[in-house]
Image (cartoon, rainbow, N blue to C red; front, side, top):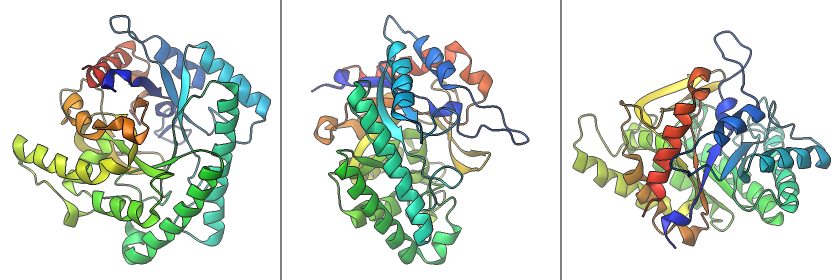
Length: 339
């Protein structure tokens, strides 16, 4: 199966992540507007095939009725899109709480996974969703508490993820843990691998690789002891390190985000600093998107990957509202899947 078989999805959560009503924040962009912006993109007649979707307000009430969810599915399908991977609302302030926390916090995390599985079932039975995973992370912002007792922290996250994976398996779903430097226990390639191996349920819980976030894994931003590159590295050193990282994490990778990174970190609102997403054609971008994607997508079909998704969290609203942004993104994604 060739890369050209992969469907191209756009993420809806850039309209939400880092947005809000606090001082210095921009307002969220509605689901319908994000859908319209996605539907408007076109490159040589090619368009986005689907969307990946964040299951929280203001886009979605995770406690919405079946009929309300079916109406959302109708809206998305009416724009010409399939629904793909879903993001469970696992963070404090949404439904969930820290996967590294108390029994009460763990219970909230698992409630969020249950809600996501229920919504997935409605979308699946509706016919709007034909595949994809449910995305989670440790929901523990920052690494300071984890560093106080790394073994204990990772063991607790492993326990939570095992319970979450059992819930997903009961619903016929798979969970993908997104590695970012801001999530405790998932903040370096080595700690992420330790966590995945600790859970040890690859058929149900895998890795979601994001080009922007995994770039900072190489640099060891929150874990210098695991850095594979140093400042001033050559191109040859970069790709040697990149292959080393992807060889470790690719066997676990069941969901993939195309993205660009300029080597900086960025945070907005309550979102701790993480890899800074940049426009696909940003002149400061550090990544050859097509080339780097090949490392992650080798043997993709063996891991059940059927689509790839763009992720551009915390872009300014003016950037998101610019049609050129989405055409550049779509062009880059077409480049990824071109044989």
